[in-house]
Image (tube, rainbow, N blue to C red; front, side):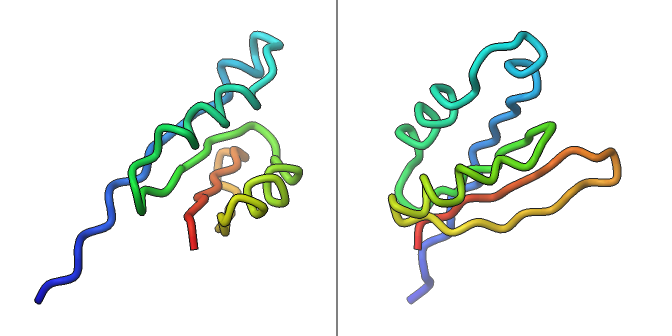
Length: 80
């Protein structure tokens, strides 16, 4: 029996919100609420969103982070 495939990550780029001086947290939480079972969230941000690690960790998420060559942060949140 083949294990079910993990859905492709939902990508959310919060740079436009940050550029417009709008808080990104509501959009992030909305995106988390729309995730399909097993679907990760790929967050693109102009800074490291360190407070999210604990906030989403309390909801059962782990994260992998990296800084891209262009200086943009890419964090993938997945439910454990």
